[in-house]
Image (cartoon, rainbow, N blue to C red):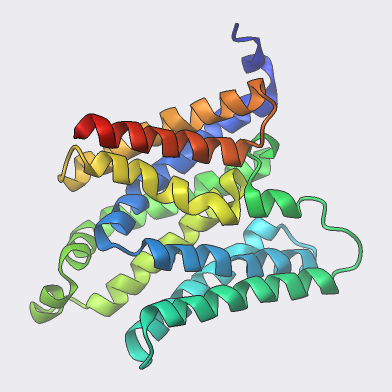
Length: 264
């Protein structure tokens, strides 16, 4: 019954599910509490410019997406806070510009981009050992940063104005949080893709938020839920020969609906 577990690509996919679920549990909890889901979606789509740049420079697109995603997050956060236009307008502009840059870089790159579809819609079954190493490194950076700035993130997430009043550097802390969102986007990119990653980023935390308001418990529960649901999605995608990213998202959505009705 569990013969598929002997395959290395399934083993790598399940390890990936654990790594990405840690990110979803930790950073995703802040995203849900702070209500910056749309902003996170803008960062994820802008990150496609980094993927295109990676193809253009003939380097690993995931590595190229790291500085590009962080720069996009800083730009989106800066425009949102300092420019006299609405946040949704700023996000829409930068969202579109990032995607457009990615398309232009890919058009300028000679030859064919064979893995492009996986960056857009995800394919956790094609994750390589080098991808796992990058994810593990980013996970450690994210967890360490969250641990060091846990009090500041907590204050800014719940009441940014009060944090400023009591003397916390709210804007730099907020920008750092957006940088962690950007790094999380890179971790999730190969799993469910840029188009779908916002679901994996927010649904486990949204489910957990129905049962606890303690941030530590929220992160832990969201991580466990993410591991379980992502693993179920991987197994179903293998059994029924379905796209892995889309299958994981559908499992997440079904779990959210079930939890919502059970809670009521």
